[in-house]
Length: 172
Image (cartoon, rainbow, N blue to C red; front, side, top):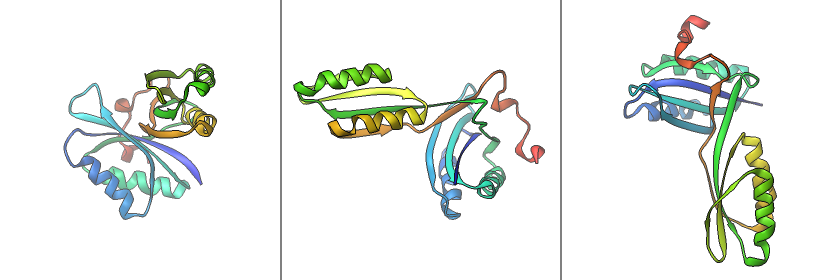
């Protein structure tokens, strides 16, 4: 199984997210990560979906997504020609005797402390998903009290833009 990142421009209307996620659910495919955000055009939203599967799964899901009226443009992010980022907020047990160790780890991973209390701290870290996974493994022994991840978002490198692409139907 391979991870694929699908990026799509969709109509910025209520119900679009439900229709897209329902499409995956009806076909029995799990979405590993989903990020939806505003774009430079107020009529459009950008959707980034990460899924596990094979080439057949990817082809089926992109074709099915393209049939939805609210999906305007769709592409699969090229791992070598795209930038992938994610945000993690993590609350850790941080008694006084363990704090200095956590602060050293924070410096190595370039994380930021965004909240500090007598027994815990909250850190913020952004980067590629595998960097965040590594950070979580390193701090796990200290006691993760709570964490939230935004989901992956991706942009193509260079001057390629999703809104400049031809429609998916024209690419096949």
